[in-house]
Length: 602
Ligand SMILES: Cc1cc2nc3c(=O)[nH]c(=O)nc-3n(C[C@H](O)[C@H](O)[C@H](O)COP(=O)(O)OP(=O)(O)OC[C@H]3O[C@@H](n4cnc5c(N)ncnc54)[C@H](O)[C@@H]3O)c2cc1C
Image 1 (cartoon, rainbow, N blue to C red):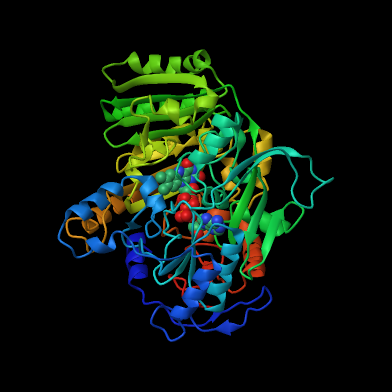
Image 2 (image 1 turned 30 degrees about the horizontal axis):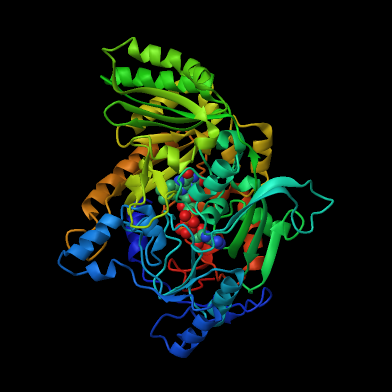
């Protein structure tokens, strides 16, 4: 079926009524009615909420979105200020009623929960889970709030918000609980789930002079990223972020605090390394750390081809150059191919010094500058490598123009910075987003031309970005082996890159005068994104997609995200959350639920 039609049909569907299975213990999965909403007779009384508030030390919040005051209001200074703040990821992260994206046209709109437990301890999480289960509530979990799928917000729900659980502690020799004598002690870092990667890198690299594989974006939440597998700029060297997981503490649907590692609850441990949300609430993660390489660096340039013919040659040259010179653990991040014959290079490098990085790229830039009639250098190449320890050092990054943006709220900590490149996504409303893993065989000599042709056809409609660090082909054998010991689609280890395309609009919210989401733009942009990815998908016998960076409407999502691992994941889900307390859109087991997670279908 045509995907846009499907989108409309899904958006217009009334939520099917039915039964869901309530739980009080892992073994109890007996049927009970659909989850309750405010106004339903079974909705907890004020006294019950007050009691919950006391049990969590006063950390129960009645949630209100700052956007609520702007809905239907004529534009005033207060709303103008809110819309300015929506471009600050730290503001978004600190607001219990907001999420980093404000929605996705035709898919979801960011909605505040009715109440939130601003958890500070594992005991708070246990209390909130027990309350939600006993009262048959829709429960959501939010850390950094960066879900593109809207899976950390839901109207009429109770939210467990982990923002204040953000401690980070380094270990010289960590052994998982119950693993003494079975596992070697190793350097590691324990992180509470609401910490964000920028702050973790600050502790581990800037202060601790070690490296931990996390995400690229500084404001993404730690637990959120790990649960989907997770990639950072240097994943081609260090692998999936989740593959570094040594141990997790997690509260499951029955309210039990469990340790998941190779020695205790190994099935749950495996599921947490990329199985997406929905297995419980993670309250602590311990990740292996690595020796810090001497150098980190980057390569940036924008080149514009002056004709279709020149664009085709440029693309073919880049595919060949990538295969010959960059297809190894040193190089990650992106090259974008965009309408108008534009190529934007934004690569990250580890383990090479300035001279070595220069030497790798010199032949390519010599080739483009030798043909000025064919290639305009829009932004001159910048190649640099520097001491790895300053990679996330806010005091250094703030001095380099255009690299980071600081949280400009009064009293904000000095290390609240974010990459300028992530500004566009703050407060965004999505029109479309799609991704597909690209098998390394596309780089074989006999397939390169058809791959280059596909990129050319794709870039006629929208920009397509190749994220080389999000495909592990070319990574060291141990990184590949560790990725194979996760539930992620095996396509990730065969892929040299993840192709991503998407389209978004500025912050907007339904009902806010002057700031309504642009439905017409959303339709045409979504169509262009579809055509872009169609050109790529034609090359792929089976489409694999990264669960956290994917289409809300991803067809065959179980197979696309997890391939052969899905059946095993579903068994883990049914064991630890038989009643589906932790529903997330396109999460494991969500096919048994209505789209809003309120009604069990089967
Ligand atoms: C600007 C931007 C940049 C990004 N960059 C990268 C990148 O470089 N690499 C990459 O791999 N991905 C990246 N992503 C995707 C990102 O990893 C996912 O969106 C991730 O899920 C975000 O985690 P979060 O905690 O910030 O989000 P949230 O929306 O809070 O959570 C995401 C999901 O995880 C669940 N969850 C969160 N915390 C817990 C917990 N403690 N226990 C159980 N479930 C939990 C939520 O319920 C939700 O379903 C990016 C996203 C954005 C918006």
